[in-house]
Image (cartoon, rainbow, N blue to C red):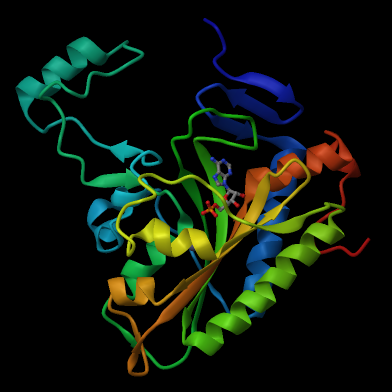
Length: 289
Ligand code: AMP
Ligand code: ZN
């Protein structure tokens, strides 16, 4: 049998469907990197969460996620709990490399694989009134269907650490200022050359609804990019879009929110580019050079 995963450098196996497997020193460095982000977030008082990979379509419905990003979504289904459907599934799909989901054997799709870590937070606080800013963090495996895949740079599934603030306008300005500085200086201490760029990601139906998620998120998105343009992280101010969508209030007003996102594999990619594939020679996050 052909091995579907190709070994690219030590500790990195890659399969062309956009999935990477890490082990050894590379995996350990990625874990230290994420632990450093989590500890930095904790030093600002952020609570750490562990989310499932699945997210309910109804959790994303208030922001009409699929109206803006249908091309990125990965949908989840399962075999219908019905003997005939399960027998047919077992017979036709047991050794198949592609499963025919059009056949009447599958449940309706009511879940997606998480497209971005922070989407888990807003439904958790839906309907709540807060009188102090919420500082939150989580790392989650995220899934985005892309037109092509490149190891560590553009994957179907990848790890995203986010730090999120929900509060009033002043809280959000302070949060964005602190975390823009923190992300940039972390890149500097790791020997990465990076600068801020306004995001220009294409999104589905750009002329669509002016109140749509993409129209709110994209114009205020700043990305920290390494030479060549690869974004290793982003800072996103949402104004009151999530607060209004999920009825989260801060005082008498809809809460404002912002998130900062670190794409873990992209930091690995940038480290390989600058320092080479031998992880033993890399600086460690949190250690001054
Ligand atoms: P975004 O929510 O688009 O700002 O994504 C947050 C971060 O996740 C980006 O800045 C990248 O570092 C990373 N990222 C986004 N898409 C991918 C992908 N397909 N593969 C790997 N990393 C990604
Ligand atoms: Zn986010």
